[in-house]
Image 1 (tube, rainbow, N blue to C red):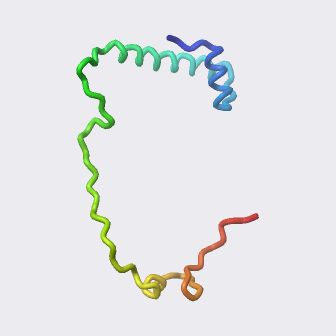
Image 2 (cartoon, rainbow, N blue to C red):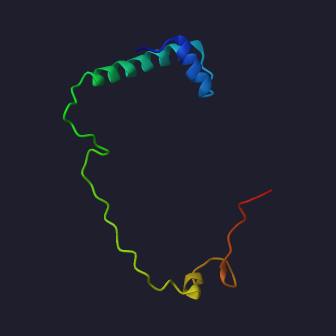
Length: 96
């Protein structure tokens, strides 16, 4: 399978890319090289090979979710640069 110039133009249009003729030529070659490589990978015999989601056999180490007392409000606000009674004051980030 190879990518034609029409395929490339359609892909560029879907990706909202404007390519000049030089870029089209460059990317067409690169896409076709990638597809050739994938075709080589498809030739490999994978019978009896178990599918993997990751190449390393890693396991997440999670702590138990134990209920405990939270930080005291006054202690949490102690080093706040700006505060308003029991709340942190932060700059407004949402505008109309």
